[in-house]
Image (spheres, rainbow, N blue to C red):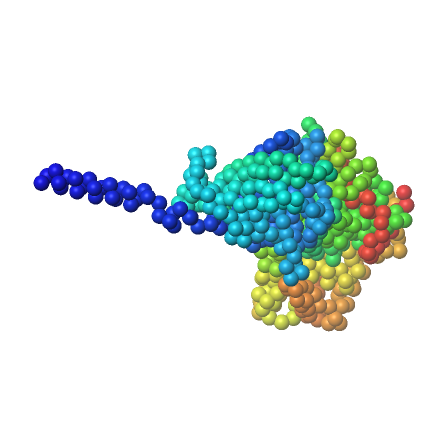
Length: 629
């Protein structure tokens, strides 16, 4: 009895084992692998009788983009396909290690690594099945299972008949269903082979044997877009002439302040410098400063430069010098006759004009989402040059900015190539802001008798909450421009602006007008209004207020607002509690050296680009003449 039970038990085990190991008809014919519409993979292509080629392939069907990097004969080629613009962008690297970019029309090539076709008038990337030449439309035959590099695979084959009767067998080996690779892919390509004969391509009749083996590695199915978003465009800093990637550069606001750090490098040599820049386009003023060392205020209303020693308070006031200074400052525009100077418009202040710009796309810089542009290469002074600029993306916001500001610059790179020698200037831009309430203060250059503190009131109640509290910068700029317009004074002579709410919620405006600057040397053309006396300016302001015609004009967001000034409210007989500054004319040797270094740095950075354009005609209003030199 025990022997019979034992035999029955053993038979049952054998039955279970056989049922578990004997393939069913479904297992013998596994489902055809479905190729992904997004992937990354590496290929080792061994071409019999020729060579070995390494390929990295990036395919993004939904994004309508594809690219490939090949390494062959110790040379690297990178190609990307811009189907929207029907362009192929090819990068190679020269003996000096520098990338060389070329752009061509996709229709000029009989073969593209990643195919495309036109659907409803729009170029579309070919499907992954078209790229692999594998799928239901190709009628593959299942051969069976095998091992490739230790990986269990399913093998499919189809025969390709060439014109003239020759044929090749295309074998594909996919990992079996349920086997997961290191990248967690299932049924991914592991190997492909081409065996047979093919027609000769060298112009001779006949055929030649074909035996190619393609090994697939590191297959990523639907990779993270964040990890490969940059693989479909040239590397940053590479300019491709003729590339059709256009997007308008952001326009800078009319007034701003920013911190700058310069790093100039050429071979083993490098230099570093930093400064702060303030800019006011409506007021036609700029300011350069190094904290505690010096400040230089440029007043384009007069054509004057105020240079102030940060330690001693010593001040020099000089006229612009078109023969020596204009080359080294990015805020100048000079006329063809060499005698007229005006302030740069907001965009040209940082972005060289008359360039063709290529949109590079989105990336990340200093933790910010940014967009970047690069100029097409241009020649100047026997060198080839490019300029690259990065702006924070439109969706960026921070406490540094009013909510309506969208783009602001974060970096510029100037590259110069002269034969085998190259140099680079990196301009880092920090703390780009519109919250500097009263820059361009040159009151240190004027004695107490040359300063006139004034005050007047605005009509209405609750003006502080309505117009100033959440719009202080625009309001203060509006006060300055309104006073400039009625008095005829330039912005540098309207300073110390404050708004205070008094009794009954009446808003009082405080402002100080400055006298005629004491200019060293032959200054600007005497026909200009740079010499309006202080008493005459006060008289003009009082007359407008007494007549009830003076109002403060300012912007709030994108809206223009006007608030009338109370008639007869101008006051000048009140005590100014501000500390009196004793002014001595002249600048120390240390500041003179600092200005020289500053001039050199600015010249290296921006002068490299702008000098070629300064002699061209710009659509700007020329406010004055400078001295003849």
